[in-house]
Image 1 (cartoon, rainbow, N blue to C red):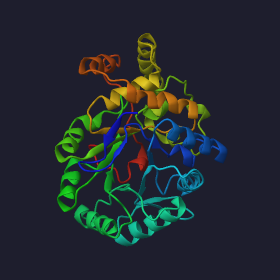
Image 2: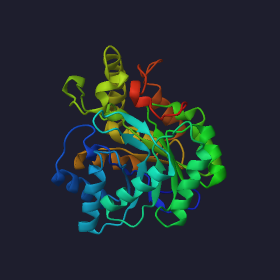
Image 3: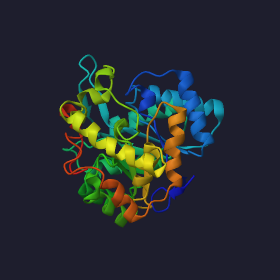
Image 4: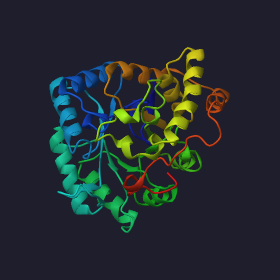
Length: 330
């Protein structure tokens, strides 16, 4: 497993981690037995970085991870997030960066995880009317209290990152990055590199589109995030599917599973990048982890990206309420 440093001075972590949103049922139901098998296999493959959140399955993801860690005694770097609140009864989402909420949410996360602290704590989304300096000071206090090891930000702009980093060193920024979503290449990746911040790429497999497995939006469950995502709605989905088919064919010609090649493409962008693909399958996890062992040159990365036509992908990466708390560009 390729190991990379978290932030400028942090611990070494596996370049491919495990994003645990799928464990919370975001892309469909799973069983406890399947989750335990997945987590055990991840550790066996050298994955030592697990990324979750208090909203994944409304705590279910954290509870299952905590149960696994208690039973297995595996040593992993845990990252969790807070800031999104659901209004009981309506299901409405709100962003809350107040000190009271972040402290309360973290305490609940620690209880579910069975830990006294987590190595990395992210601000899941930014409350735009609250100064980021105030929020980072709240998180810095949690670090001084020993409840978190490092501070992370999710879905923020480069300017917000620079402001936050002036208050306290930021270890990681998390946002979407893949052949399917490349907006962070405009400025964020360079900003992270200049500041010594690790960039953590979530959805490096394009929410399943880059795995080579056929997707049918009509089969998505009611809770599936993609049901409301513009890129998975017609006519955009069919155009995206046809474009991705060219990438899948290239991967086969190169003798690589599409997921492996897509992960390798992300990691080869720079050494300060980590990838946290999510999956419910132990078998798919092996293809993801294999991406850490494929080292692409700049020319090879350009050749892979060139198989996608101009205008790809079609559709916004979020739709409607999914944009809540996301700073653009991201």
